[in-house]
Length: 143
Image 1: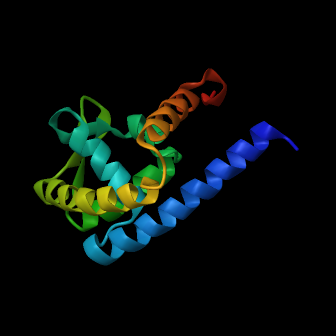
Image 2 (image 1 turned 60 degrees about the vertical axis):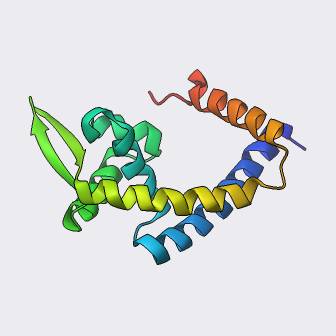
C-alpha cells in the first residue's frame, strides 16, 4: 500500500463528490457549474473584478484553452467580458456576474458547511492548511 498515492486518490474522490454536488445545486439554482462559480469568484475577489486570462490557469486547474472556452460561454450569457488592455487579454466581471456569484456563494457555502459538519472545526482548519501547502509545493509547478 502506498500511503501517498492513497492520500491523493482519497483527495480526488472527496473533490469529485463535492464537485458533483456543487455542480448539481449551482446548476439548478443559479444556472452555473462549480467551475463557473470558481472562475466568477476569482474575478469577484480581484481588484476591479479583472484578471488576465493566463493568471486564471493555475487557480482554476485548467489549460488556457479551456479557460478561454469557459469565458466565451460566460460572456455569451452576460456574466463576464473579455477585454484587451495594453496587449493583454483580461476577463472582467460584469454586474450580472457579480450578482450571480454573490447569490451562488450562499448556495455553495451551505453545501460546503453541510459537507464538513461531521469534521471537527480544528481538523477542518488543519486540513485546509495542509491542502494550501500542497497546492503551493514546487513539485506541482508546471514547467
